[in-house]
Length: 286
Ligand SMILES: C[S@@+](CC[C@H](N)C(=O)[O-])C[C@H]1O[C@@H](n2cnc3c(N)ncnc32)[C@H](O)[C@@H]1O
Image (cartoon, rainbow, N blue to C red; front, top):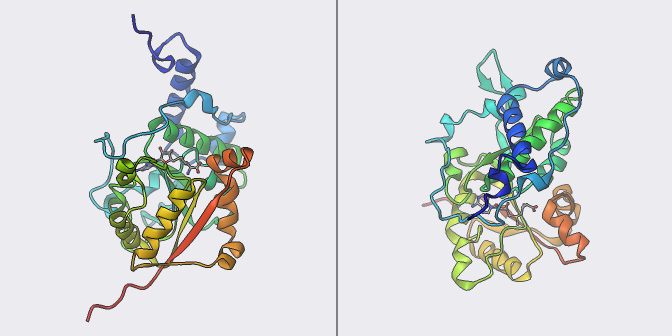
């Protein structure tokens, strides 16, 4: 007889943990967490534990996942993700998302970017369900534990396939920064089409990035680094930024150290290859 995975076995610790967190998430995911609401609940929220959110390492970006996405950016309700930035009087968002972390994994980059860019909304997009749940629970706990200083109100995560629906979420030229940190390498030649940087996808990224906006890439896989550099260099709407620019940019140093994958590479003393590209002006068509 086949045994159930721990996440589906009602007797297991993982099942109980997930059910408990799910209830908490349902209640708190879209509400404004502030000093008042926290005072009513009292007590600190524990940060989620990764071991309870395990799932397969990869999710096929070409599968038809059950994903929610708006028909167009105007139909997206951002107030649910960033309630602090919703203006009750005007019924509008005071800010829009300008920074995107594509394939954000466990969310470490956003957590470190948040205090550096308090006036910008930062969105992580992640295809794996349990990993997205982890990031949601992490943000709920951080918002709750830092309610006094209104911390972490400017970050959130969406479960989504960044290879398919970015223009459904973002207007043309909306983003100022896009991060691609330690993307899945898809080593085999026949899998290269699943890489998150390809010619076609770069045109979509150029569409949602504003002129002067920046694509940040980092990987520990040298072959993938060359692949990303090659495709970005060949694309007419991107130009590579210099090493001295990289050395002075605060996001590059955060990106090198903040993400969970980056930390893993650090522990193994592996190499990290960085390349950043500016979205150039769209040429005029005469
Ligand atoms: C190797 S992990 C890196 C995670 C994180 N950026 C870091 O540096 O720790 C790559 C992540 O990208 C996610 N991912 C892969 N393809 C994706 C896609 N098409 N859309 C959104 N996320 C994707 C994976 O589920 C995985 O969590």
